[in-house]
Picture 1 (tube, rainbow, N blue to C red):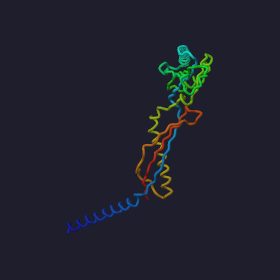
Picture 2: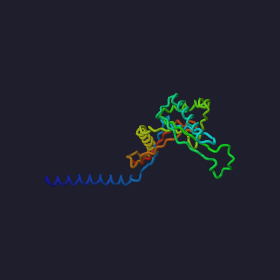
Picture 3: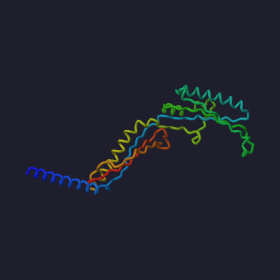
Length: 233
């Protein structure tokens, strides 16, 4: 008799467990396609932490040795100007000069006043952006020494960068995910559902760009992540 009761109890428990498994299976099947995909955004405005400043000037004439001597004199004056205002010697690079022989140009009419056009470039690369920006605003001192700095926005632009954004990535990703979850919760509430687990997520797409054309030293760091959540009743 006892064995019969025990066996009956085991059968009853098995039937209950089977019923629960079937219910869970039906629930999973009913909810398997109920998903919501949202995007999470995080943004920061930061100041650039690296600047590359090409200092460009030109010399024109007919005698190459004389032109190179003039360039050397001006490079010495520019270097002294930069060092005086706080640029370090290892932040300064003298680039090779570019020489254009106007007489060798097949498209030239050879009526140019000067045969040679030399472009000389010295480059300042520094993480002290504020200092370099202040020096850029003091270029008038070089004009008084007879040195005209050429501003070339296409071939030799001043470049501002934000190179330490890696330290910001974890916090920004966390914020982007939180914003995505907030949006998903709003959607779930509207659809009378409950947000469930994350089905898929990307690593987030980071971008760094100028805030605007007038302040290129201020950067906008942005990350967008796409996350898919499952929904349940």
